[in-house]
Amino acid sequence: MEEDHLKAEDLQHKVIPIHMNANFFFERAVRSLDRFRYDKALKYFRKAVEYEPENPVNHCNMAGILSEMGDYEGSNAVLFDILEHVDASMTECYFYMANNFANMENFEEAERMLVKYLEEDPEGQFLEEAEEMMELFQSELERPPVKVNRIRSREGVMEHEQARALMEEGKFAQAAELLEQIVQEQPDFLAARNNLALAYYYMGLFRKAKATIAEVLELEEGNVHGLCNLAIFYQHEGDTISLNPLLRMLEVLVPFHREHVFKLATTMGILGKHEAAYRHFRRLLKDSELNGDPSLHHFTAVAAFNSGRFREAGQCWRKLQKLDPASDIPGFYLDQLERLDLTGKQGYELSYHYHLPFEEQLKRWEKDETGLSEEVKTNPMIRSSFFWALRYGDKATKLQVIRALGWIADEEVKETLETFLKEPDEPAELKNEALRVLAEMGLEDTSQAILEASAASSSMVAETPAAYTYQGGDTLQAVVDQALLHMDETAGREQKKHLQNLWYQFLGKLYPDKPIIRHTEGWSAALEYLTSKQHGGSVTYQEVAQRYGISPSTVSRYAKRIDSVCSLKEEKDDMFCPFTENV
Image 1 (cartoon, rainbow, N blue to C red):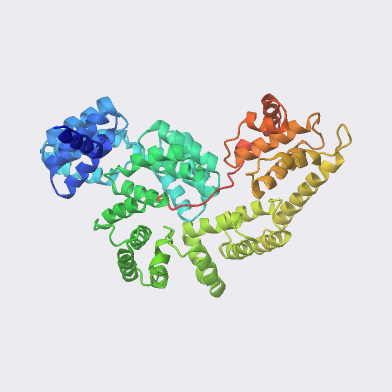
Image 2: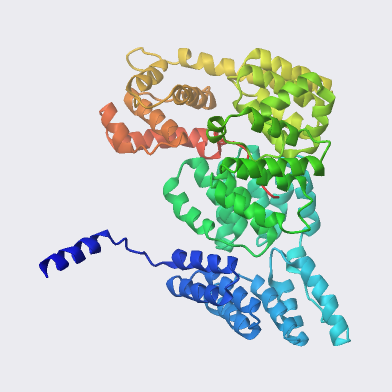
């Protein structure tokens, strides 16, 4: 008997407990759907709702299954409940209810729900389908359609389309200017806000991009585009604490609308969740209207490759060759697929951009300048990669990019190169090449003035430290020297360079006035604190103060003084990197 008891105890210790939560039942519901077991799927979705009653996605999934099973009244009851008690901003529920009423042949009520959808939905994701349904109801009811007071999603549509066209051409600054105007006039135009965030992101204005996404999610907590962008931004910052719960939520999301599926697929790819990306891209390929899109086959191939599905990747690129025989992209990647052995493939990850890798573009540009320049003009992803390389590439790459930009020669290039001329740390050789390109664009006088003003400003800042002295006869350079001596040992070369530039920037903006130097340690500690924060560090006033033997309040006081002069919160983020978006 005692032996049986011990066996039972051993068995109990070997049992792996099952954690029941909404995700657990969601996964089982999806598996049941794959087997067309709608009754089981409904059961599991209902359990997911019990565990997360505040999550509208769970309710929508349940409504969708009920509709698939022909229980249109039950589906509508769930959709009404979402709007009444869960999330009133989910205006797409009106569209789903219109479909359910239409399936019940209650066209009067279906029309009423459709009008409600058109007047209330800010994004218009089902706008085309809704207009087709209105024509159907007109025929069924044998009368003119009910008047729609306004189509909310179409307010500012023409301007928004113009801004999107500018983004597709890679003219992000011009697009941002137009989108800012749209958002100011129509604060609840969320599609415009999302695209404005993307424009800021591609321009390198990372803080403004993140603030814009925060505004989107404040207006609509469950906005798919906003949530996906926020996840990218968290990854960009290295903020895994904020990213991980958001990522778990996105991983179980099954969007209804194909634009949301595409957005989610690209986001999962960017975040390194290639299995999820592959699943969503495969779902899109099953749509007959999308199956002929060459870029979709490339995205699916990349997701397959990055998740170890090399045979499927090859199939997708071969399909792409048939769809777009003039493109070099499928041939390039199929060649790479053959060259890499199995070990190499498993340790190699491809970008989702639908263009050749940047290095390969430059190689081909050297052979055929005209051909590549035309592609750069029309492909915003290539254009943004050029702007990114001009900012972060090595000297040789930057020189090639400047020459390549000369073939585009549009307003965006002009603004980019003029900004480049103002950079104090760029070599004279590169600035002279940028000046030559701008001269060919007929902008020599303006560009020369910018270059001379930049040189004068740099000269002034360089001379400033030697011109000032403080008690003890030491120069202001001692502030930098002391900071470099005490800096945290984890600080890299770029951070140290940033610290020196920040100090000279501070002195240059004060000139001809000068700061009163009583505590060298206070200024040095403030410089270290600010540059550490700019580079994503989690340093505190207390930690810095201990190294310099001063109080935290002293560090804070001097840091605020430097920040007030240099306006660090308005600086462009220096970690910008472009990513694929469905704009």
